[in-house]
Image (cartoon, rainbow, N blue to C red; front, side, top):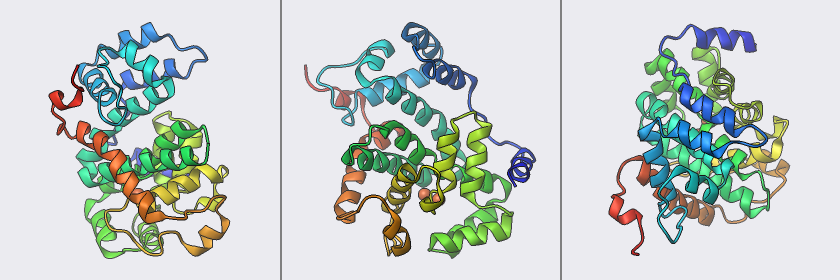
Length: 278
Ligand SMILES: [Fe+2]
Ligand SMILES: [Fe+2]
C-alpha cells in the first residue's frame, strides 16, 4: 500500500519539495548539540525566513518585553524545539496557500496551536511535536488538489462529515488525504512520528501514539471555520485518554492565541505594532 501511495505521489508533477535550506536547518537542529552560530549563519542566507522568524518572535504570540533582533537571541529565548516548528511553519505556508488556499493555512495554524494548548493543559512536554503534527495534519490535501483540483473541491463541498469525505477521497483518488499526507511527510524527510499523527488524525484510536494523535483529532475538530457536531465522535470520545470538558471555550482560546501568528504570516502585522513601547 505504501509503495502504491509513493508511486501515486511521484507521478504527480509539481509536488512541492522541502527547500534545501530548511532541510539543512532541521538536520542541524536534530543533532544532540546543535550549533547555534551555524544555524544563524545558515538562516541569514534566507532573508525572508529570517524576517518572518523575527516577526513571529516579536509578535504578541510570545509577548517578550523587549525586542528580539537576531536569530541567535531568538533561538535562546524561544528554545530550539520551538525554532524548529517555526521554520517548518514558514516553509509549509507557501505550499499550502499556493495550492489549497489561505483558509486551509489558517485552519492548519489553528490546529497546531490547539494541539499545543491541549498538550500544555495536560502537562505533556511534547508540545512541539504536537504543534508540528497539528500544522501538517492536512498536507495530503496538497497532493489531492494537485492530482485533480475538481475532484478535491467537489469532495470538500459535497460532504460535511469527515468520514464521508475520507470515503469519497478513497473512491475518487484511491487514497485519502491522511495516508497521502503521511507519505508526503516521509518524502520531505520529516520524522515518522509526525507521519503517524497525520495518518490517523481522523481516527486517533488506531495510532501507535494515541495521545498526541488525539490532540490533533480534537484540535482539528475545534479549528474548523464552522463547528461540526458532534464535536468529538462519541465512539472516539470513549477511547480518549483525556476529556474535553468545555470545547466551546477551548475553541475560542485556540482562535485567539493563533491570531497573532496568522497576522504575521499574512503580512497584516505592521512592524510598529509588533514591538512594545520602550
Ligand atoms: Fe483532515
Ligand atoms: Fe483539518
